[in-house]
Image (tube, rainbow, N blue to C red; front, side):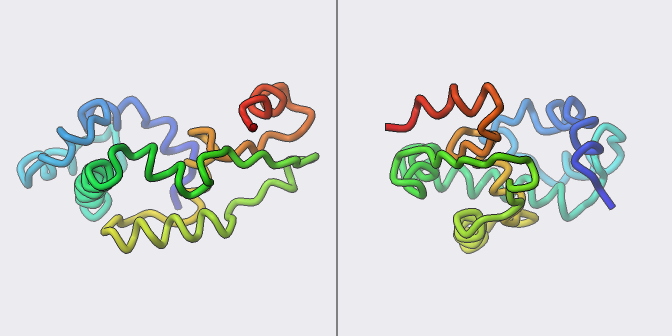
Length: 148
Protein backbone atom coordinates (compact mmCIF):
# COMPACT_ATOMS: atom_id res chain seq x y z
CA UNK A 1 0.00 0.00 0.00
CA UNK A 2 1.35 3.41 -0.92
CA UNK A 3 1.40 6.14 1.67
CA UNK A 4 1.52 9.91 1.34
CA UNK A 5 4.98 9.76 2.91
CA UNK A 6 6.22 7.41 0.18
CA UNK A 7 5.05 9.83 -2.49
CA UNK A 8 6.45 12.87 -0.67
CA UNK A 9 9.82 11.14 -0.34
CA UNK A 10 9.84 10.67 -4.12
CA UNK A 11 8.72 14.19 -4.99
CA UNK A 12 12.08 15.21 -6.51
CA UNK A 13 12.04 12.03 -8.59
CA UNK A 14 8.57 12.92 -9.84
CA UNK A 15 9.64 16.50 -10.56
CA UNK A 16 12.50 15.24 -12.72
CA UNK A 17 10.56 12.40 -14.38
CA UNK A 18 7.59 14.61 -15.23
CA UNK A 19 9.50 17.61 -16.55
CA UNK A 20 9.13 19.88 -13.53
CA UNK A 21 5.36 19.26 -13.71
CA UNK A 22 4.97 21.29 -16.89
CA UNK A 23 1.60 20.02 -18.19
CA UNK A 24 2.41 20.89 -21.83
CA UNK A 25 5.59 18.82 -21.73
CA UNK A 26 4.00 15.96 -19.77
CA UNK A 27 1.02 15.81 -22.15
CA UNK A 28 3.41 15.18 -25.05
CA UNK A 29 5.30 12.30 -23.42
CA UNK A 30 5.19 9.24 -25.65
CA UNK A 31 5.57 5.50 -25.27
CA UNK A 32 9.38 5.66 -25.30
CA UNK A 33 9.45 8.07 -22.35
CA UNK A 34 6.80 6.07 -20.52
CA UNK A 35 8.86 2.89 -20.93
CA UNK A 36 11.95 4.66 -19.54
CA UNK A 37 9.94 5.77 -16.50
CA UNK A 38 9.14 2.14 -15.69
CA UNK A 39 12.85 1.77 -14.85
CA UNK A 40 13.07 5.01 -12.84
CA UNK A 41 13.47 4.18 -9.13
CA UNK A 42 12.80 7.83 -8.29
CA UNK A 43 9.06 7.30 -8.84
CA UNK A 44 6.47 4.62 -8.21
CA UNK A 45 6.85 2.44 -11.31
CA UNK A 46 3.31 1.58 -12.31
CA UNK A 47 2.50 1.56 -16.02
CA UNK A 48 -1.14 2.63 -15.53
CA UNK A 49 -0.26 5.47 -13.17
CA UNK A 50 2.45 6.76 -15.49
CA UNK A 51 0.03 6.67 -18.45
CA UNK A 52 -2.68 8.37 -16.39
CA UNK A 53 -0.31 11.18 -15.40
CA UNK A 54 0.17 11.91 -19.09
CA UNK A 55 -3.52 11.67 -19.97
CA UNK A 56 -4.42 13.76 -16.90
CA UNK A 57 -2.04 16.46 -18.14
CA UNK A 58 -3.93 16.40 -21.44
CA UNK A 59 -7.24 16.81 -19.56
CA UNK A 60 -5.72 19.64 -17.52
CA UNK A 61 -4.79 21.48 -20.72
CA UNK A 62 -8.30 20.99 -22.14
CA UNK A 63 -9.82 22.41 -18.94
CA UNK A 64 -7.43 25.38 -19.13
CA UNK A 65 -8.51 26.04 -22.69
CA UNK A 66 -12.22 25.69 -21.89
CA UNK A 67 -12.19 27.95 -18.81
CA UNK A 68 -9.27 30.25 -19.60
CA UNK A 69 -7.25 28.76 -16.73
CA UNK A 70 -7.40 25.81 -14.40
CA UNK A 71 -7.77 28.27 -11.53
CA UNK A 72 -10.99 29.66 -13.05
CA UNK A 73 -12.32 26.12 -13.34
CA UNK A 74 -11.55 25.44 -9.67
CA UNK A 75 -12.78 28.73 -8.24
CA UNK A 76 -16.19 28.36 -9.89
CA UNK A 77 -16.72 25.34 -7.59
CA UNK A 78 -16.63 27.66 -4.54
CA UNK A 79 -18.31 30.73 -6.07
CA UNK A 80 -14.92 32.45 -6.24
CA UNK A 81 -14.60 32.56 -2.45
CA UNK A 82 -12.47 30.30 -0.27
CA UNK A 83 -14.40 28.06 2.09
CA UNK A 84 -13.41 29.03 5.61
CA UNK A 85 -14.04 26.10 7.93
CA UNK A 86 -13.85 26.49 11.68
CA UNK A 87 -12.47 23.16 12.84
CA UNK A 88 -11.33 23.08 16.44
CA UNK A 89 -9.43 19.79 16.31
CA UNK A 90 -7.54 17.89 13.64
CA UNK A 91 -9.99 15.01 14.11
CA UNK A 92 -12.79 17.26 12.81
CA UNK A 93 -11.04 17.72 9.45
CA UNK A 94 -12.60 15.30 6.96
CA UNK A 95 -10.70 13.39 4.31
CA UNK A 96 -13.56 13.88 1.84
CA UNK A 97 -16.39 16.38 1.42
CA UNK A 98 -19.34 16.65 -0.97
CA UNK A 99 -17.40 19.33 -2.86
CA UNK A 100 -14.42 17.01 -3.34
CA UNK A 101 -16.72 14.19 -4.44
CA UNK A 102 -18.38 16.43 -7.04
CA UNK A 103 -15.04 17.77 -8.29
CA UNK A 104 -13.57 14.27 -8.60
CA UNK A 105 -16.66 13.11 -10.46
CA UNK A 106 -16.42 16.02 -12.90
CA UNK A 107 -12.71 15.49 -13.52
CA UNK A 108 -13.28 11.78 -14.08
CA UNK A 109 -16.05 12.61 -16.54
CA UNK A 110 -13.52 14.79 -18.36
CA UNK A 111 -11.12 11.84 -18.54
CA UNK A 112 -8.92 11.99 -15.44
CA UNK A 113 -7.77 8.69 -13.96
CA UNK A 114 -6.31 7.63 -10.60
CA UNK A 115 -8.00 10.61 -9.01
CA UNK A 116 -10.61 10.51 -6.29
CA UNK A 117 -12.29 12.72 -3.70
CA UNK A 118 -9.52 12.36 -1.10
CA UNK A 119 -6.90 13.61 -3.53
CA UNK A 120 -9.24 16.37 -4.71
CA UNK A 121 -9.90 17.53 -1.16
CA UNK A 122 -6.20 17.58 -0.30
CA UNK A 123 -5.63 19.63 -3.46
CA UNK A 124 -8.42 22.08 -2.61
CA UNK A 125 -6.81 22.58 0.78
CA UNK A 126 -3.31 22.94 -0.67
CA UNK A 127 -4.26 25.59 -3.22
CA UNK A 128 -6.32 27.64 -0.76
CA UNK A 129 -9.88 27.00 -1.87
CA UNK A 130 -10.61 25.41 1.50
CA UNK A 131 -9.19 26.68 4.79
CA UNK A 132 -9.28 23.58 6.97
CA UNK A 133 -6.59 24.66 9.40
CA UNK A 134 -7.77 24.32 12.98
CA UNK A 135 -8.83 27.60 14.54
CA UNK A 136 -5.80 27.59 16.85
CA UNK A 137 -3.39 27.38 13.90
CA UNK A 138 -1.72 30.63 12.80
CA UNK A 139 -2.55 29.80 9.15
CA UNK A 140 -6.28 29.71 9.88
CA UNK A 141 -6.23 33.35 10.93
CA UNK A 142 -4.05 34.36 7.96
CA UNK A 143 -6.27 32.58 5.44
CA UNK A 144 -9.48 33.78 7.08
CA UNK A 145 -8.55 37.33 6.09
CA UNK A 146 -8.93 36.33 2.45
CA UNK A 147 -12.63 35.60 2.85
CA UNK A 148 -14.88 38.59 2.12
